[in-house]
Length: 304
Image (cartoon, rainbow, N blue to C red; front, side, top):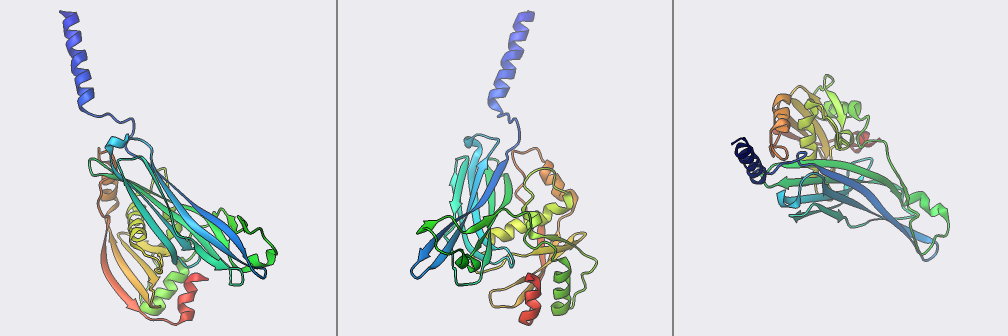
């Protein structure tokens, strides 16, 4: 009898294990971003540098049968202004890995040097309609400008100046952003804290402070929607459940946006839910959008 009872328990355990998929860990996607560069010598000792942004998304924890789709998006972004030079994304279905490469940013040696950074986003959507997202930044490519002084190059080489960056896009811009908003829109945000876009973007793993959860969600959504010729926010001013950012528009005007952020408790509850990934919910609302005009000197304060 004891032997039969033990056999029955074992059979029930095995049946349950086969019916309910067990995960060693919840779904987790990884994101990698990098610049890919080359240089070409043109006639009369002139030349040109080229830089493209690559992003890769790789699911780390679950089998492909639990994946609806996986997205990789790459942008080649001006490291000083947040301007988007090139943008491309790909969504692949029922696979664990995908990657994308933007078109090349071109810069002649006789033009001023520009700094271009690769920014990438990875997102897995699981069969229970939850998601996991990660963002990452790559190296900064310095193309054009002083490269003319390097003299003769090979017909096609890898000599464009590229280096890893420990800096963040928009780092240290809090005071300038407050001043520009005060000058153009008459709003005093001196009591608000500042976090750069690059710092939010660089959070790839580990524990995320609950008060940043909604800001990360906001920054990633803006990144997904932003197109070539537009600019990413350099950072956000936030206090409690309110956040602001100001961004130069393609027509040269400034746009100030006010957001209401979901409470940290709501954001953390979504992260702690017993699901494969996180709940796919928006953790902010747009409260107000204002447009203003300013002199070039005032706008350029954001980029100095």
